[in-house]
Length: 252
Image (cartoon, rainbow, N blue to C red; front, top):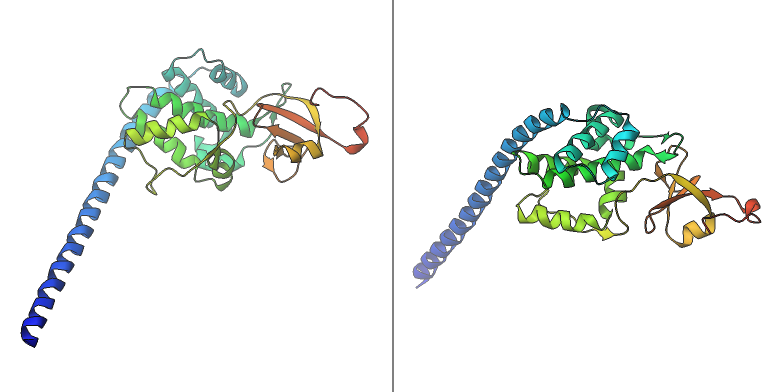
């Protein structure tokens, strides 16, 4: 009897291990196929990126941004100008280096870091609206690389514009996922574009109470700063000191 029980246990163990091994093999095959598709998409995306580079407007970075937010461009032209703008603001045009963008455009006082974030989002959205080979892969690459910046991920993907929800759904429907397997959940606040001219002022207390994002003198999100970005209303104010409270400002 003991031999029969041990034999049965051995058969069950082998069967269980066989199922585990089969499951591991299936997962490995799926992963290998996924990476093969990503590599093919990367090559096609690189080819499309070279084509778009030749089609972008020859304009200043600020003029390129204005063209993007005008809403008058075709998806292909929007993608081309977005990539050109990223190349103008970031070394190699790599969204993962978003943290290096600093400064304001003058005389409009428009923060360059927010302009660069606009270029990533509007470029990726435009690519997804195209039917060209490599466009989906390039859209995924832009957003995936953007998430490699911890600050960009915190300020623009973890807390994202309302339009990002539809973008993620469209990506999921096309089986386009970041390398870690799924799109992270987001809290949605405000709309694109992120950037705008700095105008008016707001008290420090109001900026805090309404959860505005402070920007430093270089236009970068910070724990404290001279400017306050109101994501809900899509406006950026100067933060005034308490001694200026006696003066009325449009921000109030």
